[in-house]
Image: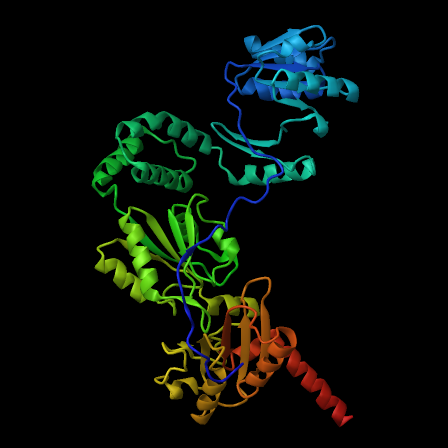
Length: 505
């Protein structure tokens, strides 16, 4: 790591990204509307009975063609009444005309191929049970909270795994969601009658969803409906007004996002995100949201803060819900103050959703208490990067030399050597444990443990040996005797003890 910064970073413009597109799908999940429509089922086995139960439950008029009808299918037909008609004969191509779907519970491959060919010739989507080569669509595992329905498919690769996933989803989706989904269907005409615009409707249904998630087993009633409608009616004057949210993306692991951060991301129209935001975090944003990279990296081409502020305000004034997504916590060395000022100056509402800062993420990965009662009475965060890219001139060196403090240094890549020298000159013990951590909480996380006096040389060697001088992601340096509790230092101490014992014989 060089001790002095290089040339100032070149400017770059915010750039909308095409990232976050839908990954390849083995199957397109679709839900057929079958109420009152004719469906053909060839076969009378128990496998046919299960498919018949699904189709009848969807409200179709099911016609079953089979010489032999299993007891299970016969019993189902009696229960279903007019929804299932049994024809005690083999199917014919003419039976497929005008059908919405064709399903074949057929063992023989040649017969299955003939049935599939006849269905396709009639323009009818076809499924031959357990014969993927003859199928236009597949049946997946189902979680039924109708009208809320969840379908699960493994494209036939692992049906048992699909069932296990279904069981997991069953355990976390309350039965009461059925009533909320039914209420949504019956309340929709009332919402339509308000004449709200797109954002007004979204706000209504977001409030509805929050109530459902908080009280899933409650019965949505007219009192709640009228209250939500009244709030929507009162908010019509803000219909075209946008908003801004500063959201902490955490250090990288998407599972460290707060529930509120996920909710705000899923309501966003536009996401302005930093280079430090992990792609897996962006995947949690609303799929329809525009995603624009406004990255600022030390000593690399960076977007100007004024350009970011202007874009953020312009989009919000267009009525967009803008999420400014920042690595770590936006209020910790995230330049949130400048963006809050810009939003307030434009008269735009702004909220802040905190995130787990990189220091917390690093401590969790090291399993170290930054305020270990035996070693630290104070925790301090400092930046090693001033506006001009150099080490800040106004650092409190007495505080940095405090033996009873744990210090976390943000953005230290180019100035750590100078910072360490000045802190030691101010009285910092050169043997103080120090640890650099790159890409904390991410799969590519990398650490270098040393002392304050030796860390720079160890980092330079690691960069040259493993990474050709290019740091493997964002870096933090933590130092203090609490950091000495990390496993890396325990291993080093054991090695030193072994060497000492060997020397003593």
